[in-house]
Image 1: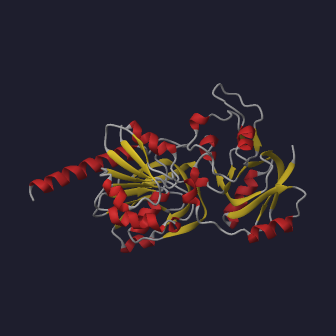
Image 2: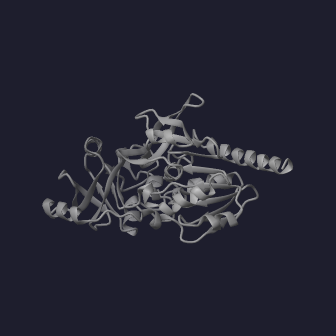
Image 3: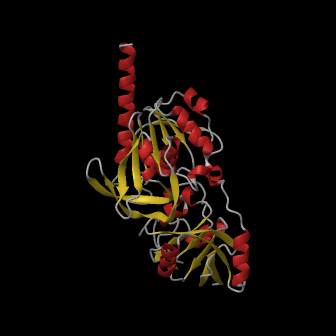
Length: 367
C-alpha cells in the first residue's frame, strides 16, 4: 500500500499506509472512542469536513452494509485507524470499507499509533490536519493548512434542501434538519409519528402553517452560532409548540433562550460517556458526538434549568425550560452507535405533547 501521512497543524507527523481514496485532504482531526459502530460513525453528518480517528484498533471486520447507515452519503473528510480489515467476514457485508471510501473519494490512513494521536489531541486540543503522500514536505503541508479558511456552512451542506413527509397516524412532528441522523427519524416513526422534515432555514411562519403537535431540533455539524436563522425560528415558536432538541438542536435551544455556547478542547465522541440525570438521580451511558457545549454559568440569567451533566467533565448534557414545554439533551438518545439507555426521551417528548394539548383544550373550555 502507498505510504501516506497525517500532518497536524502543530507540526506532529504520523506516517502510515493509505487506503480508500488517494486524494489530499484537510480537516479538523477528532477521535471517537466507540468499540463498535464504525459504519454509523462514518455516516454521521455531524462529522462533516472532519478527519475521524477511531480508537478501537480493528476496523472494517464486518464490512459495509448500507442498512446500518445514518445518512445517504458520508460527509467525513478522512478516516484514521490502527488497522483495517481487507477481508471482512459477515453475511450482511456488501463491500469492504476500502472500496466504500474509494467510491466516495474519502482517504483513509492505517497503521499509525491511534493511541498516541488521541493523547496528542487530548493534550493540545482539537487541531486541523492534512492527509498527503509521504514525499510531500511537512513545511509545505503546514503552509497549506495555514492558508485554508475555516468554513461555516456545514449545516447547509448536511441539511435537506426541500421538505418531505414520512407519514404516520400519530402526533404530527416537524423535524428541523440540521444534519439529521436517520436514527432520530426511526425513533419517531417507530412511535407512529407523522413527520415532516424541513430544511435548517425553514421559517417559523412556514412551520406554524403545518400545525405541528411538536418540533424536533436535530443534531448537526459545526458551531451553533453559525445558524442564526434557526435561533430566530426557535425564538418565534417556543411556547406555542413543544420542542425537543438533540445535540446541535440542544445548543440552538440554549442560544435561543439567552444562554451561551463554547468550543470544547477536544469534544465528546463515543458510545460510552456517563451522564447523570440530576433531577431523578439516575446515571446512564450515552452516545455522543459534539465539539461545542452550553456554557454552564450562562444558564443563570435565563429561564432554563440544568437537568443533566456529564460525569467526566461536568459539562451541560440536558436542559429544560422553566415555563414553556421545551427540553433538550447534548447526547444522542437515538444511539447510533451506542447504548439504548436514553431512548425513553422520545416517549417523554410525546407525553409532553399530550400534556400540552390537554392543557390547551382545558384553557379553551374555561376561557
